[in-house]
Image (tube, rainbow, N blue to C red; front, side, top):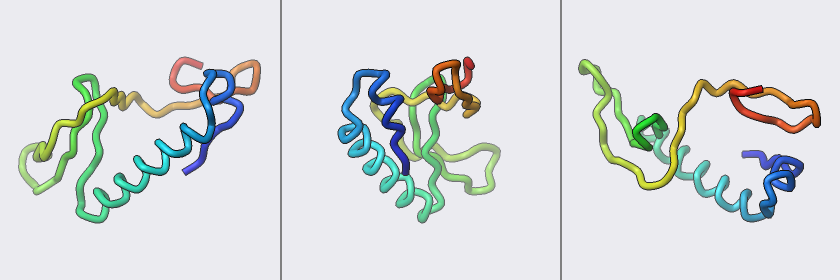
Length: 87
């Protein structure tokens, strides 16, 4: 888990608050991984999924909140700030 302080400041957010959220999500993602569960983010929201070898992953739970999987690409803009997908 890593918090990008410059990006938090550019967004007007407290890096300590962002770190608290990131630690919690990272902790739960590790717990899910230990059970063989994936935290999935897509256009329809978030889900917990499990691959049982069937035709698709089992949807164990739908999650509240904003989850966007995207393609995961990142890059630095002209100001040196790390941004996702649209750089």
